[in-house]
Structure formats: structure tokens, C-alpha cells
Amino acid sequence: MKKFFIVALLSIAMSANAGNDVKDNRWTGTWAAAPQLAAGKDMPAETDLSGMSLRQIVRVSVGGDVLRLQLSNEYSKTPVEIKSVYIADAEDSCVIDKSSAKYLTFGKKRNVTIAAGKAVMSDAVKFDLKPLQRLAITINYGSTPSEATSHLGSRTTSYIIKGVSKPGSDFSKGIKVDHWYNISAIDICGNENSAVAVLGNSITDGRGSTTNMQNRWTDILATNLQAGGQNLAVLNLGIGGNCVLNGGLGTPAMQRYDRDILAQRGVSAVVIFEGVNDLGSINGNSEAMAAKLIEAYQQLAKKARERGYKVYGATITPFAGHSYFTFFREAARQAVNEWIRTSGTFDDVIDFDKLMRDPSEPSKLKADLQDDWLHPNAAGYKVMGEYAAKIIK
Image (cartoon, rainbow, N blue to C red):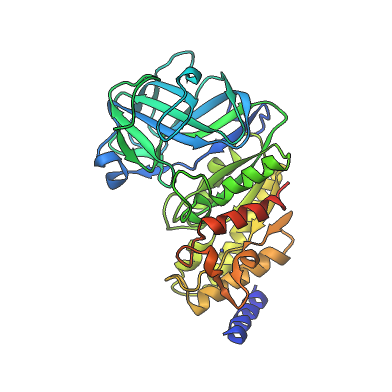
């Protein structure tokens, strides 16, 4: 460990980031989002969803003809009452193809109450889900908590109207919010598919990408895998502001890993791409933080391997020019990246650092690929997704 850290310091001086059983391969995830808490300003008009109809748009990765939807109330303290849920092919903005609409059932009933701290899975339903298509999920709520289990970084607009909607209802004048609520996974049925689950922070969540354009690096990865004939689903479990160890936004990766990554269905591979927020919070011993991150990566990789999954380690991208940057935080980043590249812990390495750094100033992102010197822009995510598709199998 000391060797990696000393080398990093020298480098800077010289050069001046229908079941829940994980073994049930009958189901494979085609879309997922990591649950987190929404309250206050993160709720629509700072209120709850009681008596509302919520239409949310997602883009899946692989297709199938039978699917099911998982809904989560894991971060709320009281139950969520749902009157009905229907899915449909999404067209423009909030518009759906009404002829494609299908109501979901839960234990053969349209209504379901999700207990506090729990998640539910719908019954299987026949639906012609195409690869990479946009799917609309509309939830008619009864009584809901004042806070919600959500995914805040949807990068996709959701639409809310009062009352119970039907497939023909008009959402065009509804409240608009760029969050997802209660939806957490979509699975398809069939043994011919598998999925790669990506553990990440805001760079995976898509900060700096284009709202409603589905151009996160994981979206580009899914598109390129399909174009290359690989029927491999991509599950984006990034959370903006997330840390590996503690602090940050959302439940830290070490605590959420079993639920958000290992419990996804049909997984064959895992990508570990976290750590920049841990580095950005260093206020003391940078070498100690690098060592703790490396130990955490070893534990995460070991857990995945015990389930027979392939494990990819992604290097942490540069952040000089951002408020995170200091000499010692950069040294820690370089030490961690050198370990990712050379330790042999991973089946393969996705070297986003090497890909995205400015050759003339390696502690910085390439100027034309960055949004704020920490997050890539849409062009940067395109480069990342295309590159990752050449490595992930």
C-alpha cells in the first residue's frame, strides 16, 4: 500500500475515480434503480403522492415477452397504498400508446399496499418489451407517506396528475419532476439473458448527461452491447453523491451492495466504479483512506465471486479543477487506481482514468469531455460507454 502511495506522490511532484432469489436464473433484470429517501424539496411540490397518478418513463436494456415490476417502500416509515399500476409503450414525453397498456397485478389483485421498509414484486405479465425501448409506468396512489422511497437522479421527467388515471388520461398539464418514486426494478423471463450490475455514484447515475435523452455511460453501453449482438442487460445502480464507506448521499455502497447489486436477478457480472466521493471528503490521512477503499473493493469483489459473477474494476476519473481536488486526495486517487490496475483482484479493468484524463495534465479530465471538472458531459459519457462495451462480456 505504501509503495502505491509513494509512487503516486512522486508522480504528482514530477508532473506538477416472479422471485427474489439471486440464484433464480429464470428471471433477469433489464432495468433497475437504487432506492433512496425522498423528503421535503425532493417530493412533488413538497407534498406527498396521496390521491395522485404518477407516470414515470424508463429505458430498458434487453427485451422480452414476459415481465414483472418491483416496487419499493424500503425508506418510508408508513405503508404506501396503490390502487393500480399499468405499463405501456412510451411515445413522446408523457404520451403513451394506449393500445399497448397492460394493468399489473399483485397476487392477482390490481391494488397493493406496500408495508414500511418492504418491497413487492408484481405478478408476471405478457408484454412485448423491445430492447432499448422506453416504457411508461403509471401508478395510481391511495394514501402515501409524506416521504417516499425514490431514485432522485432519474435524468428523466415524471408526470403527476390528481385522481385515478386511465391509459387515455392526459398528463400534459401535470406536475413535472425529474425523480422516480417507488419503482426499483423490471425483470424479464427467460434463461438466455444475463445482466451486468453497475455499482456507482453520480458519474454512473448520469450527472452531466442530458435529461430525457438516456445518454448516461451505462445507456451508451447497453446500446453498443445490443448493436454488437450481446444480449447482456445493463443495470444502473448509481446514486448521486454516494460513498463507498460512509457519509455521502444515499446508503453507502458497503451497506447497500447486497440489496442493490447481489440481489438483482440474472446477474453474471458486476462493475465496481465508486470512490471519488470518499476521496473528496478526505480531511486527514489520505493514505489511510486509500487503504480503506482498497479493502472495501476486495470485500465487494469477493462477495460477487462467491456467486460466480465476473468482476470488473473501474479506475476513478480525474477531478483537478473541482473543489474536491487537493495534492493528497490526488495522491490517494492515483494509489487506488494503480492497485485496481495491478492487484489482480478483478477479472478485467475498465480504465476510465486513462480514457478520460488530459494527456498534458493527467490530474484533469479532457476539457471537451467534462461538465464541471468532476462529472463528464454527454460527449464524455458517450466515450465511456463505447469504451466499456469493448471490455464487458
